[in-house]
Length: 247
Length: 128
Length: 112
Image (cartoon, rainbow over all chains, first blue to last red; front, top):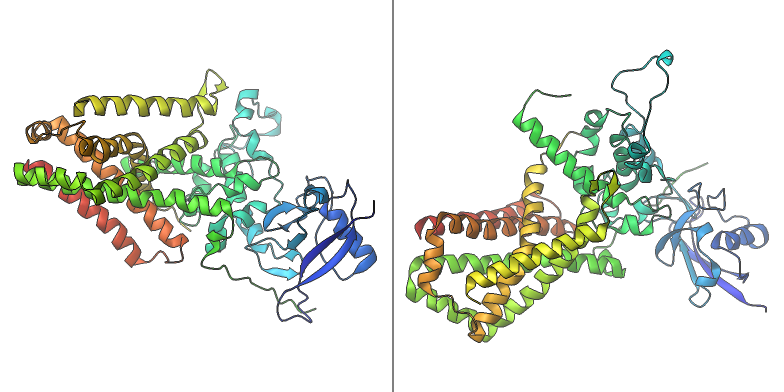
């Protein structure tokens, strides 16, 4: 069965292009191919200049995020057979500057990620001789879901607030902050609050929920952010009622 | 190597681009109609304070065709607000009871239960 | 970045959302369907008696004030979504309108 699939890909080469423009390619249809396989076919056989990020090909590294027919998806997670009848339109992830072709500039995300201090901030530093932090299964369950983020940025592409306000810390970074705030070994809530509880943090979110819908690892950043709003509000009132009682 | 990152402008009608965003906008606009009904309620309080004749006039206005039409539109949006609010609450407030997470459906169900109880109480108070 | 004072706007918004969800639909059923149909009468005497009662005043106030605030905050955020920005004018319009409704409601309930 010799079927072909047409891909329409947004190209942008800063050294020659003033504006991005679509370029179409025809690749063979294979029942088991994902969009990433089609891109690799293009790069190997049709057009070596096409640039895109990818690595694991199994939806765990988070590299190959792109807009596929207007929806943020991992290219390794989108099967050709699901798009066969529609034609496939591929663009770089929304809400990020385009570096080249399907490669986006993610520097802003890297800054946002580090700004939430995504590491255990212990109450007191334990000497090694004291042994490990002990954590029960119940304590792990409290935050485990939010550890699954692969930083693929699909949530940033889906979130309209990320499009409307560049400074918005964003779903993945806020979900990761929540992951640490819920960790029983951590006492860094206060230190993260200047970012998390700022106007550019959880308060920019209007619970559209698109982030959680597109997340390939079911992290549910939307839930994390709403929970963080409630705890930020309670902290705010505690601080207001008991000023100076900063942890 | 010259870098010249290209910034795509977000269109003002971005929310028309995808069904999920249109649904979101409708959800947010429920607040407009809730607000309108609050205006109606405040007008009612005003008329009540003005006296019997004013209050009766208010009730008559409520019962007029445009009054009913406006209120039916408000009712549709207010109900949609209730449905979406209840559905989202479990995400914002996950509950743990005796070490087990309370299923989302249970939280939603409790809200529907409260909705029914409140509605019944109000209906009875109004003289149903 | 610094901690925001948004909670002072957000907590009443959240409370108002719950109150609106629980009570507004049945109120509209009463005023928009049952009263026009004549199934329910809301006689002046009964309404003023309810509004004379301190608990009645509190209930009426909460029923109006919290949903009004909820609507104001949500419309302010939606204005931003629609490209109208988040400037002083939007905030003044939204919270100002809610403020007027709340003050008038309080004044009326004190007067009745």
